Image (tube, rainbow, N blue to C red; front, side, top):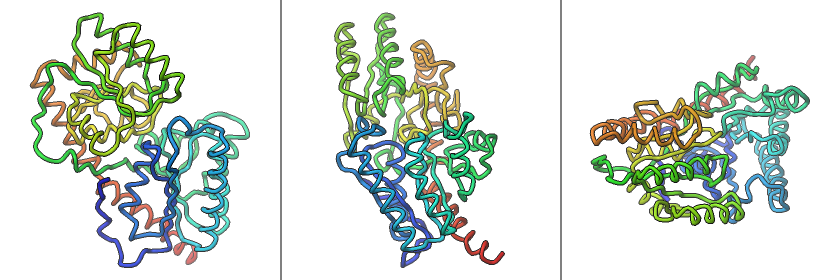
Length: 383
């Protein structure tokens, strides 16, 4: 695991007035990866409360199981106890987008409010669906969220979306990553057979069947292509269904199912890819896109969540007009029209990483947000 640079303003002793409550991998989702980056960056700067579930996976995430229930209760109890005992001025915590998990986190936010602790909440997804509908869930959600000092979202458009609903405390801070494996010279050459990479949860909601339909379409057209799928299956049933579908159509030679990869094994697949594909039906800002940019990989994706603010259509990638195999094919043909066109996309992708998505930029902006939250306690006392 790569160590990330610490904030330049890191003091010799941690500032206990700021508490970061972090859930780190596994699973290796974007939220957990970003939490690990915050841990590495601020472990000597602020008070840290880390939660790690060694046996947790994408298959068990979000399901009503005894283990998840036990973890949820432990998470709330330990977090609340730390806040009560240390009385920080500011707390950072992720705020789930789905209502059951939001309910679980609500007691922590209420205790922080009672103790007049400023909360920086992190929305890892694109929205809180329950506040976009009428009813008691919306009223409860707004009652919990409005007093929060700041709700960090992934892009300006998502901040505007929340503000239109009445959450004026939404603050846009894009994710940022450190990717040492992507440093060094790159030639950005166009592979004779395009190597398309998908990294994430293997599920229909993430566009898995769009990818498979694209592969079948390429095979029917005589278009040479190879697709690499990296990630955990949503369920064993889906895995078996997809394996049978691929086998029945004779697509095995065109597809590599890598499973979950981390570390050097994951970076090796990025290094050998031509472009990243992400035809998701919903998302926030996939960290895998920032990793792709670090390697100079253009991105073909659907314009959902913060993706339109992340991928510049026609410059660093292609934003699909609809979630279809045909649009995925059109994006591939556009980006890989010839070696010169592809190189232009690749260079712009790497430039986006350098100028917008490096870890140092993210750490600096988050540190400023933590300090503003911390200092708001003092300002409130002087008022």
